[in-house]
Image 1 (cartoon, rainbow, N blue to C red):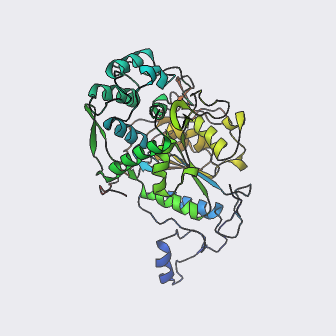
Image 2: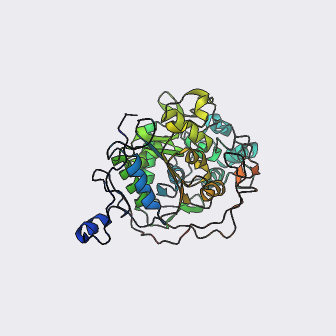
Image 3: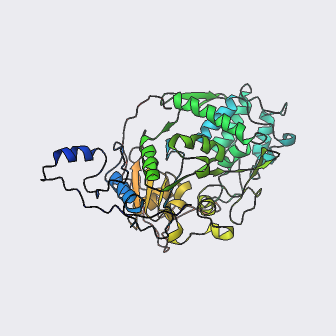
Length: 442
């Protein structure tokens, strides 16, 4: 990270009420909150639609406080560029780029036949029933599986990936750490075995083009079933990322999708490959293998930690903050951590908690992250409805005091604060029913 001055917008508050500055006010209202200190060099958020309550104003104040746009009096703490970290799926975009890529691979017959026809080589966590079901549905007849023609094979792969079960309902994965690994997500990266990173990016780009061009609500057929066939960037998040970057923040995307896929999509919001983290394959002879790179104490090829819950913390600490070895798995001192984080799901909860400035959560009714966001013990959590097709109010309270937390072994328990106290059940108070345009995006 390059060292930059830290700043607070050092200017007086523009008091428009009663001053007669009607022309100034009209110009300023489009770009800044009336309570925001005037700072000509500080970029302003320009998209106001979709933000709940004072969320946009608080994000703007964070930009002014920590950005490099004013007099250099920001309070980030260690003199480096302030870091902002965004989850990707359903945080920066609506829907899931991993899903979009998997659907494209299946529709176009681009999944390689497992080595020796042995499905156990695709994931160390695959169960015997799942391996048997896949072998039966997907006989090894060539270098790639004809999932564009063999609907039974496509259905079986899609069920294992999407539902975590076989088409007959048998558990597909077992024996993993639920705070470090989601084997269904990892399996997509592992099924890119045999392709180069460039080829995987080409597949992702083709899926991206299709999904952005499709109207909102589009479904596509994969195997014998129908699945989501569209994706949209959130204008609000594009605007936020643009503003943060202009203000001197070092902006990263950390996704539980394969890293080459996230890199393709990240360009659409101005985030380059060097600022994108995702699931990384070990490569051999220039091609992806079914093994994954590790973090912290997890070695390459161990396949037991991806960018998922505590794994996201590890990868952020390692690749963004420069922490190596076992220390990367731990919470870092506040002065080293990201200032801002945005997410939508329990998979994001650890790196959200680590953010020292603000933590933005898009409400998808996920238990642990909503329990922590609504508890809001330090006042730094922002909850916002999804910007496209937001969920309505959750009828029952979040079960924070009983089953809102997922233990490492998969057991459910209460959600606890840092001091060990239990978060009481929380009611869903931030929700909406906004309408979205069905126009395609580029």
